[in-house]
Image (tube, rainbow, N blue to C red):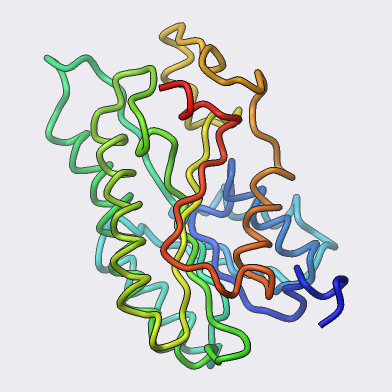
Length: 257
């Protein structure tokens, strides 16, 4: 394989959950620009419509509306995708929620909302889409699962996002468990752990006046090329021998903690 093909995902089919906004939209755009077909799953139709409009002309993109914090929503995505596709090359579990509140006021509702989407939804979507991933997998070209974790799951970061931090640590360990389970079936499972990206996810902490760059040695927010570059590595021939990895994408933030 030539170097020009090493990072290619041309013609692959990718499902990106939460792919209509923030980091998910960056990923959706990057995959389309790299020649993949993309299906975006999200619970908000207006966000899906806006994403499709912003991605117009870049490639083939479809959408599925579903709430992935529920098993019904997970099954909706799996059934609709299975009805029109025979295989799935890339699953990007990006959909996530954050709940910020002082310790004494942290609610069960907030805790459950975060855990249901960030951990339960990831596991059951992997389970329900395993047949499509197995159909795409081969020795030469494994199917790929990429879970979007967080630097908050690697180290204690600013802000009172207790459930979020715990959930992302769970995602990282779930990634390793799934990687071991699925390796024999030629499905790799890895996680990317982003630090600060200027998205809506950070808005609650920033409203509290938290300096999100205080502990970031590179002293900037992450950008689209940063997340897309790591993702393409993991989803192409370049990353075919990588599984069970959790890759920090945080400008060095976790090295200071």
